[in-house]
Amino acid sequence: MMNHTTPATDTAAPVIRMTGLHKAYGPLEVLKGVSMTAPRGHVISLIGSSGSGKSTLLRCCNLLENSQEGEISFEGEAVHWKGRGQSRHPADRKQVTRFRTNLSMVFQQFNLWAHMTILQNVMEAPVTVLGEDRAVVEERARALLAKVGIGDKADAWPAQLSGGQQQRAAIARALCMQPKALLFDEPTSALDPELQQEVVKVIKDLAAEHRTMILVTHDMRLAADVSDHVVFLHQGVVCEEGPPSRLFQDPQTDRLRQFLSATMAT
Image: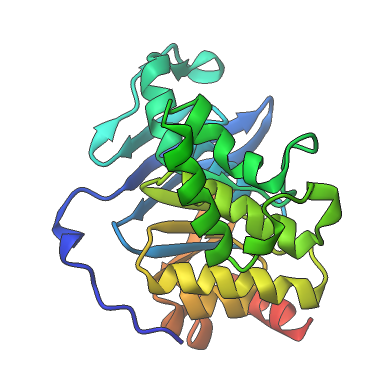
């Protein structure tokens, strides 16, 4: 298990802070007052059964979903809201764009553009969204593809790559935005076990670089290996949280004990 050295910047405002978030789809309450903090340079893992609210929390964090109550701040700057309840939404579209460009998300399904080469996929957002110089972005994109182990696939099409290679391309694409934090939504669950390990290695390497990451995962070994802090969600609330050494070795709640027993047995 990694022993992360606490970064010197911990005294600064956390990269992400969510306080008392509520999210419902009609009568279905998915998040019931969830709070979570991601300090700079830390890896936070979200674990829990399917339907516990993990992915919804991540999407609320990135403002892909609108929460109905609670606050979200990025590096100390709070999201400006308009409206109340089900009609609540961010008031400042420029703020949303700015936040999103600094919170790169890696999805379970790789979401690569089929009509673009791998290199074009990685370059697209920095060039079109951020307006960066194409030559500068290409150099960075090629370096990132090499970093994740697929430098030789720059001119290939997504359909020509394995699932593990496509997910590594998606991680390179997220990194090319030079974000303040990476958000992973079940990055290995769509992959065969052998291909999962390719992606796990990349995530572990990023964690060792003290990148700020929030990781939704069913892979308890990965969560234990890379996390500074683990949050166990159950039925839309934080049931238990703490350092992975304590959560996995000495769970305090019956619900977490049951979850780990079932998860570790598979």
